[in-house]
Image (tube, rainbow, N blue to C red; front, side):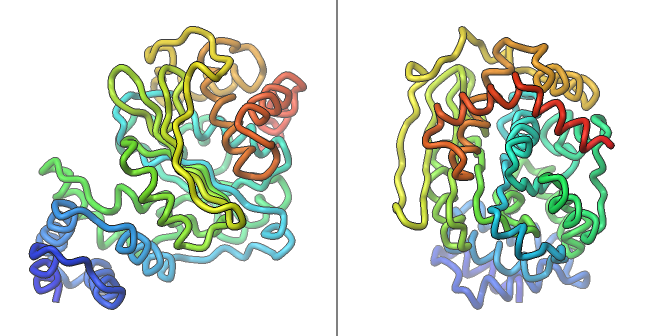
Length: 344
């Protein structure tokens, strides 16, 4: 069955919803050889996945995930996720994880979905663990933490058991230097099913297609960004170059724009200023930012992306208003207090 779908993909036409369902059934089946799965994923990547296909894969895999028991009151408050696909290979510190903590300190429920490091030295799970925040929570504990503390980490392997049968094929593709649709799917599979999301991608051409995917998945508000640097693009909004933004609102439609570096209150910054290290080094950076000790370019990178997240969450009228609110949350001590609360 999977060999036949590989032939369909190789010949060019997009997969139907039924064919995507069949493909996922084959990919998660233990009996199907990893080599056949890798051939299918490689063929799909070479042809190029359509937004409809990516959304279809996300829907099918979501149905196989473990759902946390999140209550209606928490959902009504507006859950947000802040994450990047990874893969920009610039080894910045954990900007989106820092942003998630700042946004939670504003009273926004943040369901941070992530894993350990794959393309960097420190993944979101790694750095949160180094900060003393629990990451390998049961579905019940994650839902409770989100309700009571406005932040919880949803550790991907705990919520997506079907992925263990896909991992060998992904490793085969990685050994060949071949990306797969799963490079995009991670940020789309949050088991908490947030209704708002800020997502970073390492190529500006991915912004609009993946924003359409978020829209197709039923989110009310979404923003997909890619920031320019002299050495390529970040899967974050950039403080060293312009950024491409694709965004949508359930009442105001869809748009693509460029955020100019010249319009931002950014101090002079080079890419090296945003560099991170291992999990302990990045945890130290986060503590310094949230405590107000770090006032340089790393803080600016967090303020910009937190400003966007607060805007997407409906807590700010613009990214720049969000920047000011994020600065207030740090300078007032609320961000540091949130970190201390989560550590307890």
